[in-house]
Length: 571
Image (tube, rainbow, N blue to C red; front, side):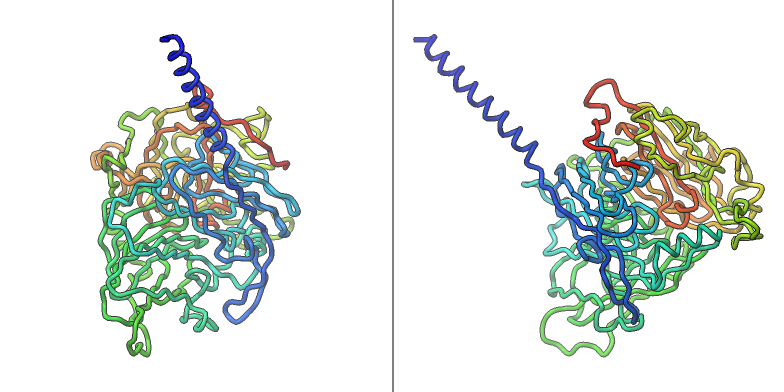
């Protein structure tokens, strides 16, 4: 009798095991696939109509609504005229650099008339991220939000908002953005500034022919809303306010922070912020407004939208306007950024590297290179061409992507000798030195840094004043979040500055604005094998070569090694 019971029990256990395997296999294959079409679409802004590259005809592009840990596939069909890639900004893509997107770093671009399927793998991200094109300047109009919600059954670590309002800040150029950067690189000149900024695709009523199309969001008195703010602007950091309303920042770059009460934010290109706002003022209309924090070259346009209360009341002749910080108010920037602190709770822990194995000191500079035009000078300073560099090295984009070259051991595509320190040492933030004494032309090229798997890394980013061109540089690292452990003005002092590091609750970011004539220190663990781009998110700087990449070696097991590619895009 006992043996029969045992036999029945084993059969039941066997059935349950098979059922579990079936469900797991089904879950593994039941991944949603979306089809996106890159296409030229006519849009009218600032009194004129032009064709822009879009995804599914939308500007901004379609939003992805996902949950923490989800996986989704997006099949991108390129029906446009330019080669394009898509980057999933802030998505770590564990072991999956093949879908990260930067052209000629992680893949060769999707050629016109072709398609490519990306697999977007979420891990610990939770909050607002975004996606954008990552080839030349196509991201000006090819971008959109990624909303990552808590897992089913879990909530936010703050009061659940009554609703949420996406806010996508972007640039609008009257001209063809691809021709603008192409001409600038050919002549060595500054590219044209944008003609306007937009909120959710609209410039707002401070711009011509934009009054009736301005974005309006209708809110109910007493309710709390989650603003999901994305800076998709090409070349400007932005101050942002809602007139007469307080804001509370609760998340940055899809990681929770200790609540930051404020009446303004400063958000760099590439950054995302989750911000609570309560509709607790008199029922009326209030401007939402954003304008630039001044760089060397910037647009002074202001973009507007309206925060409009529902109900019956007499609307004002003009909405209340916020008192935005001045364009050059660096104190407002430092005051805001210095308040970033990770939530660092039991449900949302952090793991800051304390013992560092690899240290990099990286200088960030705008500079010039000799003109290469035949029988003609360039349009940069002194007849040279404008350029940019990290550690005196201007990055050259290869013709075969670095990831493919690394995976297939293709020689001659890159060199793995990006230096730990700059080759030229000077008083970085005080000397407005001439560029021709600065860049090490013989080192310019596709130089990357190779990291051991699971090694701990510290990078000190040091701003410089070469050519009097110091400004706030939003440095973005693909494949990782990093901890901002230090931030200051002037030159970094290796003997004194680390004493002020925050190793208790530093914010976890993927993009940090290195302050004008200042420094920022980040730390991360190199636990994601693959090839990962690092660059300034001011697109003119990235186009000039303010870039490099990290190659993170495979770990000792299959689960700590790069996944094999499902397909490699031809170059």
